[in-house]
Image 1 (cartoon, helix red, strand yellow):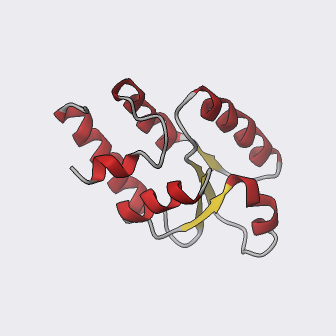
Image 2 (tube, rainbow, N blue to C red):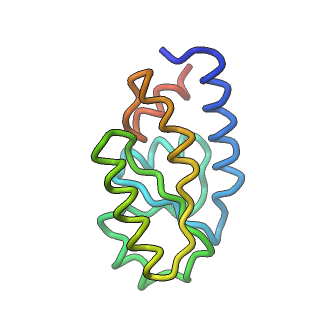
Length: 122
């Protein structure tokens, strides 16, 4: 499992995410279980599924920033690059920093956003 140093970094990263993910920020995830894990962590911002982003964006005020938090496996990494490029072309500010900081958990077998919930139960 995750060692004490990495667990503390994980907790700080989540605390920063909760503080930063406010009303005018959208967190983009892959699915329902990812949203549940982030809600468990205390994220109160608008969470949108990447597959529904285009239809959602038409119904909401333009966010100040979009935080990308897709899975940490190789497919998730490809999706982050692709989605980030697309969103930037659409004129959005994109934040990949949380994805980068949480990606270190891969070495402990945590490859999905939904799996973060397991660490919160510790």
